[in-house]
Length: 140
Image 1 (tube, rainbow, N blue to C red):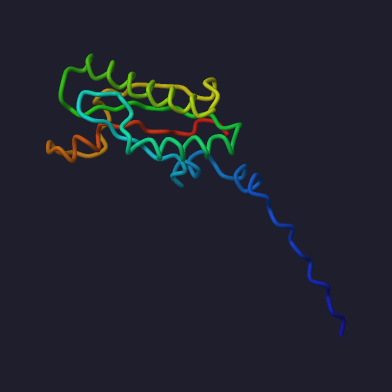
Image 2 (cartoon, helix red, strand yellow):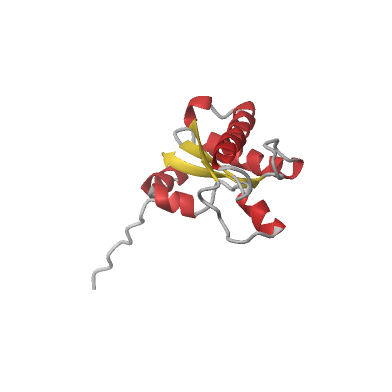
């Protein structure tokens, strides 16, 4: 009886695995974590800095990736005010990432103001969750 040699499948590199995934899959995997803000502010809070560091580390490991940072606000305040605040929040995160070495041209910013709340609710916890920057991979 003839013994067929086992054919070893070559192992995929991390890069090959990465390239096979769709943008949707990559975003679903949550490599880039959101950060939150204090009421009416766009300064990066100390407790959010490790999250941005980890986002930067991931982006630096994947230099072809381009992202969009979406700035979001809670429901309080006017539409115009929140659009401006959302932009400042996205901008603040972009500056922080650029300072950590991520190329500025790989980052787009957009403000959603209060148009896309993450959670419904008018308590402080809900407001806090809605005051955020979301990091979305738009190109790999």
